[in-house]
Length: 98
Image 1 (cartoon, rainbow, N blue to C red):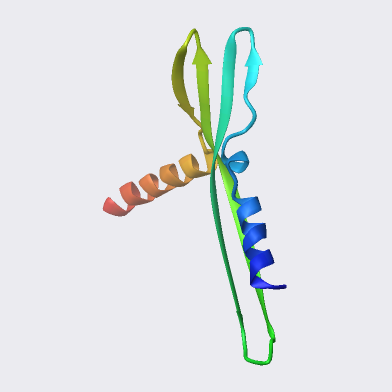
Image 2: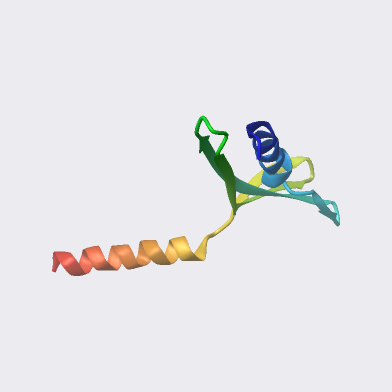
């Protein structure tokens, strides 16, 4: 795979469409889903034209923008795994202090 096609694939993967979803409209309410997206890639080779590369991308829900009666509000997504980790960490710290 040549580096230019690898970079083009990365550009296509990390687009605004990966961050902002299609607006959902119902009963005068508009909801726009938002995600956190991160990506990375790399490649390498030698002088004999041997090499390779790769790219990875990950996304998580961040929340939604809600538009109602001309007012915009932000509603963050709640990540239950992150909440559970904070609770476990807090309990461990409290238990360690005793």
